[in-house]
Image 1 (cartoon, rainbow, N blue to C red):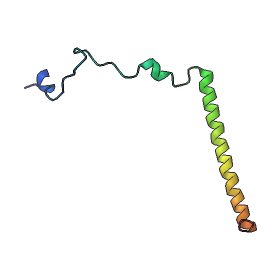
Image 2 (image 1 turned 120 degrees about the vertical axis):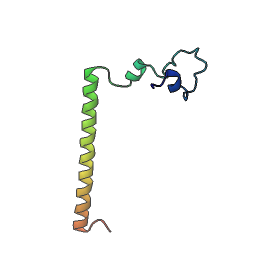
Image 3 (image 1 turned 90 degrees about the vertical axis):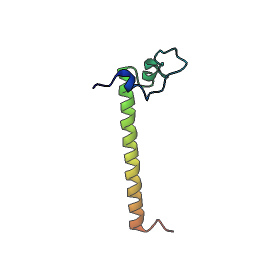
Image 4 (image 1 turned 90 degrees about the horizontal axis):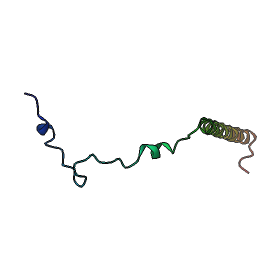
Length: 79
């Protein structure tokens, strides 16, 4: 025997305050999309900034490692 709709909905609480209509989403689709870059040039700019930031961080990390190695080799880090 197939379950009826009433059997399936038995455990689902009734919605109140909306007159039986579906609830509206809390954030509209248009507002959700405005957080992302809109034009192709803005997307490209965001990607370029991300790449430059990653390269700058990698350069700073490498510089710090080399400085620490140089100080350890020369013994100038503990005066």
